[in-house]
Length: 144
Figure 1: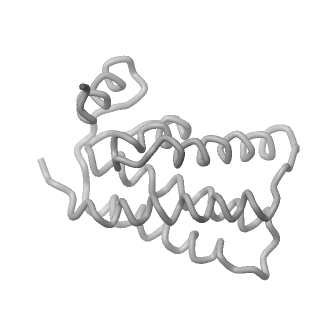
Figure 2 (figure 1 turned 90 degrees about the horizontal axis):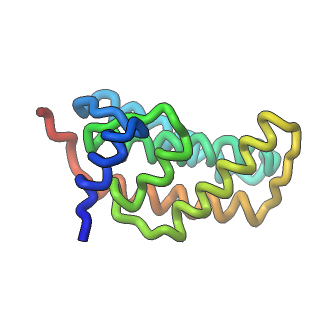
């Protein structure tokens, strides 16, 4: 059985991730950013598109915080989500929701194809809340 560290190390070896020492200040800033955006994504007065953007960016900030906590960085948004089973131990079902939302975000951003409804926003907010819960259980960043 492959450990989470082994999987992340392999991704670094092929260039999908970069080793970079974890930094508590950066971690805290990413978590704070994710929390604020997630809180705003819950506001029913906003359009589904706005709520989606906020929740998507919250999920990315939190997933990146998890990766940074482990001492890695990626320039690829999708990889950050795909690593969640290794960084936070969450199930593939959760990162699949985030991967779908990543695809929808890209289609909206780059093709103008906005395919977002209230159910997708609810699913994204729920997944992001689960990422935040798992992230909060990590504790402080280990310097090293």
